[in-house]
Length: 326
Image 1 (tube, rainbow, N blue to C red):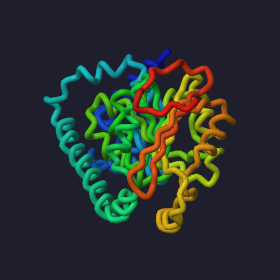
Image 2: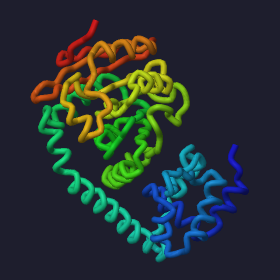
Image 3: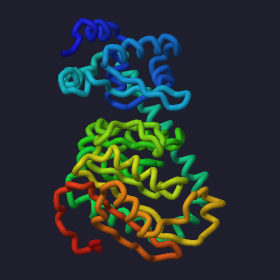
């Protein structure tokens, strides 16, 4: 049951209405709202607090930043249609907000472009060691297409590439990383996905050693080139299985075991790839059946994809391009 009095009081202020319309279009930090609205941070923070307490918006802290996203009152489907059907084209303040919103979106894009340019040489040197990203992404897509994605968790989302590729086909998509700068890069891409897809995506700060998520919450969990940063990968896999639904899939994309020590010293890899035996044992220890594995050769490093099914998983349609592990 919703608290109608609390909600109507929260929406009775014009500035708070403007904030809600903005956040429905793009997840924004308090600082970005200050920039758009042209008001002081204490004043905007007060409005944000009232909207948060009413359940209309939801605050998420990332380091020293606080981001706003639609809260349970908006996501339960009852109030959102009212905002979606409201014509704001005759409200000058709202239209000015939308112009400023595009400036914020452009600033995020510029920030991402600058980051990519600064790290291009580093990433190009790593990519040169294995098959193209296109081939890897096609193989991931083939595996994921074997069953509905449902609720998806992308662990170590980095720049948000998995969000770009698969969020449209998910019911809900959580992009999690422990690096605030990476989350800002991932968030910068939301504006290019369209409002319907972006509304499904939740950007979240978190550690893969202790996921800030409930048990059995996700149907699909993806580790895309992130497990090699784990000091204790078996523990990370166990934690992922905890939040995996009983009919869920866990997909790990990483390097096969190798001896390229420069990846440890230059790129901070904690593990030099993984042997099939290690992944298989970690899956088995946590009640996950290793259903598919793929090896993508084409360079000094082989890329592996392991897909595990939690016990009780329904049988997936066979894919002739995949090697099935008995």
